[in-house]
Length: 263
Image (cartoon, rainbow, N blue to C red; front, side, top):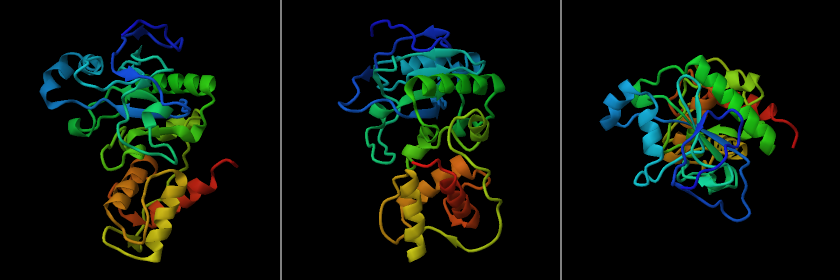
């Protein structure tokens, strides 16, 4: 991988990764996708001695076939691995709205965190401050809409859970990043769940599809709808992430959609 100049003045270091290529013709980076690095079981000792160091090595390893444009350490240091104009390999299979090649239409940011397998620890303030600063810089330079700042689990609900229900989307929203509203409180009442088949299920699926999720078609509450519902909860209603569309989940979606900017 050839050296490159950092795209942002916020970058502390560059560590070029060979795991990248050209964006598909006609597609540009109009989305930011946030990930946590997670922790491979065989790398627990390396994580303890150097949080983030093992992830950096892995993202630059040709055998890993994975990368991201940026890596943000626990202390807020920002490392750029792939030039923004290039296609980093961070998203894998997924879809959002009409884009099925997420790597070609996004900029990927890996945030150092052990993830669900490591107990999903809280993200340190210095790290989130760096996420906000970098995302603000990217969205300004590339005219990316707030709604297009998303999590990996949003575009790949069946495969991914990052950045997780502890990620502070509200804090990002206060800084003008991401679309968010205060979630509807939990309460008892009817719900839609896996195995149901009704017009109400079709309406809930249509709401998810309209917002951007790839929730499929039909009146049956199948696995695809379950995974999309769970991903929505992780991002927008994290008080209970169970994949069932209860009143709180559905009402949160209604308010979220109503709060979208015109157009």
